[in-house]
Length: 364
Figure (cartoon, rainbow, N blue to C red):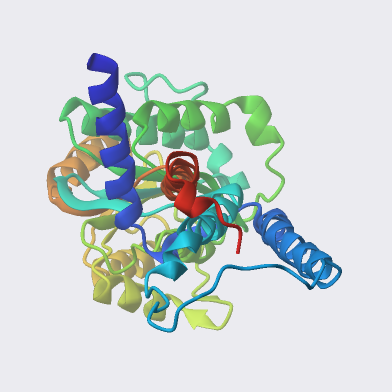
């Protein structure tokens, strides 16, 4: 009884899943092979019908039959003798569809959870080689770039310690920008990525040492756009840079346009400007970047030593409370069991009719 009940439950589950499928969600992996198989299976009964027709023309024509009285009417149910054959043919398309290996990938659920979707942008330009002492963060070397990487790791660990369900991505930029890690909830993977780009050998191979902060910003917005979350709630960017760049145009877009888009899309930009011993205004472009990031709804932090940098990270962490909308997708799952179940059910019914009732053994 246990095995039968499990089989019945499996059949019910398969049938329910099959009935909930939408044709628009199906993707067939073996469509061409399924067409060939379906054509072959349909050809078999057609060939048999043709063969029967040819043999019947050569059969003797003089056959003695008993008298058929006029009062004997043709039964209206005579066509039912072909039911087994019809059921067999009806099962062929279902079997062909199952053979096509249909698959479906559908949205499992869309939820809101505490946390933010954060793009962390790290400046890896040549000017980041200047000294910056941070004994508590213990960067690989007392250079601004390594301190920036250590600061990014500190920020991620702050978010982890507070149990935020953040979705985090990492971008490294110089005079070009690269997505190091796309958005993920795997914070340990983010920390590993930061350690990898913070390795001196990796930075030495980073051969685009110019500084174009606006290109990093464009790549950050593009990352949100790629994941189709630019209009979602809870987005933000954190830029850690020395701010030594005054470029305000990139590919026909101005810095003001980008910040206006970030403001309209509710993507505040927080910039931690690293410069050891350099307070607000000591870097020529401080006023430019301060006005720009504040225009997006974010804040500008001139970090002139380790304490000011740590205060900036704590403040960003404090301001980064909120909720994000997260779409969770089920893995691509096979959809053939329902079609296979339908084919087997039709064929078993056809076989049972032919084997149990002689009435259904007539071939059309």
